[in-house]
Image (cartoon, one colour):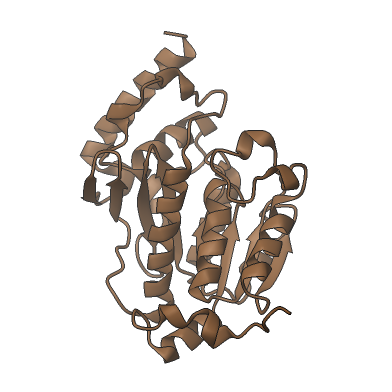
Length: 291
């Protein structure tokens, strides 16, 4: 006979790093996660194990074998199944009290208000190339005063940026505007990780192809992202601990055993960033030319 679920018992090992009252605070929080792939799925399950019980999750895709190397919900038993439904089922299996509202069409202009309604924190897990959806979602968070965090899986490490109410916005940092997708991609790569700790050990450079919207990934990076972002979520939701807000950022690379804080006043307008953007454009031009 299975044991009945008990919230306090299930998350009792969190106590010590959080107080019993803080655990109950986390129990009442609502987090929105857009994207159910490499980082999105493990974000959801990590936050569920932290004791958060209310989620909005958005993804329009289904699992396939190509997802197996990095996506926590990708298994032979889930191939062809909608990612959001599989992940919601996994979260409820951890905590039957979890309330998950699924947005099966992903996030877009028409459903953003509903996706962010009553949300205490937004965690970005959209596909790298989902420029329009990402730009709209971060703009809505800034407008609504919702804290937003993004953790980028890079190589075998993770880069972190937080966009807090009243601080520098996503648009102010990245400077996307109405630029073409190619330029947005370059600005996103450069802006996410100014330290570039992951670059020296890319052993197959041709695996990165912005024009074809593909690049390599590892599950280690996704797991590191989830750990870092869940820790930021804890600090933001409980209102304690230092929260780095853009233009401050952080990158940790497990392969190189390095941690770097970055500070780029003006975001991609910073002189160092401008130089890196120029290098990125030249690299993209070489890739496009097949050299």
